[in-house]
Image (cartoon, rainbow, N blue to C red; front, side, top):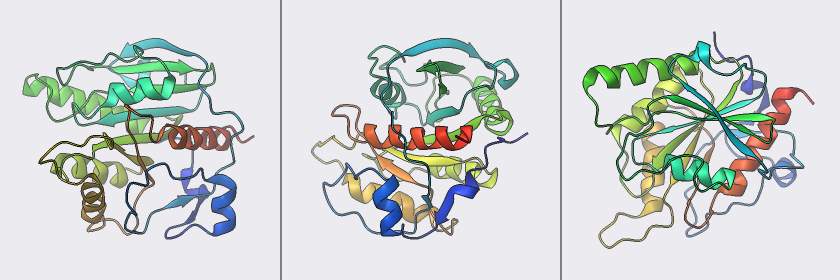
Length: 254
């Protein structure tokens, strides 16, 4: 069973957002190092949240079957990406908790569906990274199976945040994952990480983000929403919480 939350009804435009709606419901863009190329991106007409600050964040449980996840009584937001993309750091940034999600120097440490309860009103879910986990093929296949079963079976799932490393060129595994989410009608947002990093010889972050979107447009008519982030300086945090807040209100029908 797919999510009972129908995101499609909140899509107002698949090109540019009308100015009057943008000014009411969209926070100012935080990543303005360079002017990003305008590409056709889906825009959402969501309620404007009045409270987005995270006050409490509590670890609940870990499991490998979506049927054993906590009761689906709250809106749910999941985070996934290639191993070493900065997933745990992003979760800690969103929640203001430096050690909520364990940050490891060894990729692939998250191996379960990990649920956190935020403000006693919504779930944040940390999923196993894909790509570089130092496990055997059988375990990788297991991770992939229960993760995708979770995406297609969790009825209160409002949005998946697909994390993409902005410091490297587009990776096939990331593009394939985005295509899979789209093909299975799982609502997702592209979250580009590590936008603060400036290392000699590193390809341009903005170029990488634009190229990733261009690659998706070879298969997509319109792009999913996207946010540029940095867990080091907090870039994108406000936009993420604003999006979550709007989706929470929309999901509750209030």
